[in-house]
Amino acid sequence: MSDTLELVLPDWGALDTEARSPLPFALWTIGDQCLLHHWLDHAVNEGFTAVRVHAADRPAQVRRLLEESTLWPLKLETVSIPAVSAAPESAILVDWLPGETPPPAPQNGWELLDRAAAIERLWLDRLAASPDFALMSTGFSCRIHPEAKLNPPYFIGDHVLIGPGCEIGPHAVIGSGSVISGANTIAQAYLSARSFVGPVTAFENCRLEQGVLFNLKHRARLDHIEPHLVSSLDRKGPSVPLRDRITALRLYLRVGGSGKISGHFTTFDGRRLPGSPDGSFASRIALLPLVWRGEMPLRGILPRTTAQLDSLPADWRHVIRHANIGVFSHADVLGCHSPDDPEEAIHAVYQAALPPEALTGSIDSLIRSLHSRDWPEPSPS
Figure 1 (cartoon, rainbow, N blue to C red):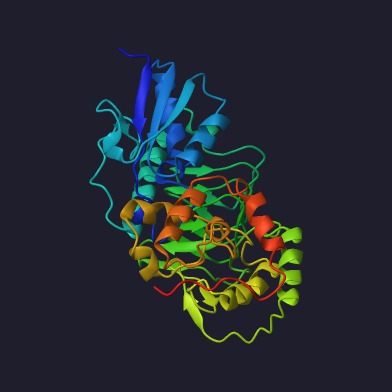
Figure 2 (figure 1 turned 180 degrees about the vertical axis):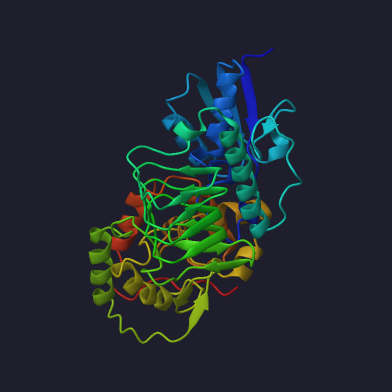
C-alpha cells in the first residue's frame, strides 16, 4: 500500500448559489472541524504518512488551510488541477465522511446545504456511538443551565452559554462562543461560532451562518433578522481600511463628484450599485461613496451583471464569481475599463487568482494619477 493518500475535492462552487460561501465545500465546517480535516483524521488512523490534495475549486484557499494544519503528523501537499476529472484515478472524492457510501451529487444550492446537514448528522451519530461521547460532545468552559435539556446526539463547542429551559438536540451543533439565551429549541440544526440566539426562539432543520439563517425545510434564506432574535457576536472591524476610505473621499472631491448619478444596476451576486455596469468614469465616481462608508473595496475586479458574467466561458465564470469586487481593477491599469471589453475578463481572471495584495502597487499608482475627469471611457461594443 502506498503511504500517500490521494484526495480530490469536489468542484461545487458554481452550485453554491444560496450560502455563497467564500470557501470550497470541502472546507465547510462539519461538527468540530472542516470536512477535509475529518479526512486527515482518517489518513492518520489508516497509517498514511502523507496526503496529496487535488483541488480545482479555489486551490489557494485549500493550500493555505493545509499549511496551517500542523496538528496532523502528515506530509501535506496541494495540487492545483483544472477540473476534478484531471485528478488521478486513485484519488478519493472528499464529498462525504470516510468509510461511507455517498449519495448522488447535489444539483443546486439548497441540495448543497442539505448535503452539509446530512454529513453532520452522520458525524453526530458516530460521535454518539463513541464510549467517550459524554466527554467529547461538550467543549471547554461551557455554562449550561441545569434546567436545560440535552438530547443526544449533539455537539457543543468551547465557551458556550446555554440558558434555562433550552432543549438542545437531537442532531444539533452549536459553535464555540455562542450564546443561547433561554427557552430555545435547537434540533436538526447548525449554529456557527459566536452565534447569538434570543430567548423563546426555535431552530429546527436550520443552518445559522454568521447571523444569516437558512431554513432547509422551507428553502428560505433570511439575511436581515432583528439582532435581539438572531445575530453574530463577531465584532469585525471595517472591511475597508481607513486609508482606502480617505483615498476614496479625496478622489471623489478632487474630480467634483456630485452624487447626482442616476440609475442603478444589480450585480451577478445580488448587490444593487449606483450607476451602470459599463465601466464609465461616471459610474466609478458613483461607487466611491460606498468605499468611504466601508461597503466596497477600493480595489478588485470590476462589478458586472449576471448577463456580463454569463457571457464568459464556464471556467472563467467560476473564478470571477468568488473574487472581490472593487472600484478600480488590474484591468484598468492595462487600459481595459469595461466588463464588455473581451480583454478585461482575461485580466479579471488573472487578478482573481492572486492574493488581494499582489497588485495593490500598480492599482494605487493608477488611482494617484486620477486628478481630473479624464478617465478613458469604454470603447463602444
